[in-house]
Length: 312
Image 1 (cartoon, one colour):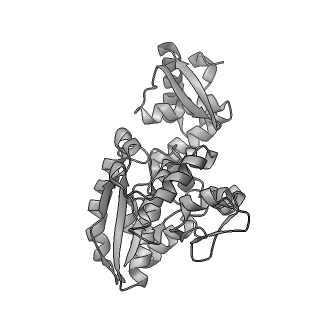
Image 2: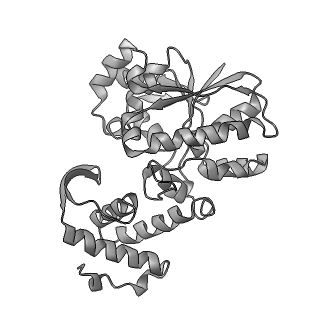
């Protein structure tokens, strides 16, 4: 039996298909329902994608494994693993962990589902991020990800960080999204790609501005046919980022709000720092008008003068 963390997203669906082509064993997909994902609507979208994808995956040419229905577990119902709980409490303020809530839970699954396979891909070479943030964050704490994807503690490494990740198998750290897409095409599974969730939001289409979408957009135009609006949003956010990170965040709010910007006071994370933010209705209207003009004139952004919208 093989266990795969499957969200219905592009990376984990690639991993599921790859394993199902390579083994005759049963494969058990696992999905954790996080409260954050429920609140923003992405959990419902991911489970919808799973329900649509699974029967189609099973009938693809080359699939050898028996893929079982996904086990869906609410975070509060996960099994207790005392060494994980104690270790996570000690390292939870680590910047890498604090920004990725899934790692507060995955390690609790590894007793019942050993060698749980996790589909974290390598970033595009052009980004110069090496093997990616997961590899870098673990390496800084004296932990290596071996060729088979399992984690290994170096002498003097952080035992608590190791306890958070041990039992997981990161078997895609040498595979880029470009390579995943090529594999889908070579297998004849390209029709599955638009059905995969590639977004952290509850929007019906890929937003193009969340972290999950960004990893695909950084691959260039290859994902444009599958995420057309997300591609446009990504290009606009890149353009807006030239002015400031704050304005780029306004654009993220604009996309996530379906064309409106959230107003009032709230806390946000910009540039890896927490900020107490207040956005007035007047500011929101100015930026909404500018962003709509950029959308209307895409990709000719030079035709839009931001000062005409009251933005200095």
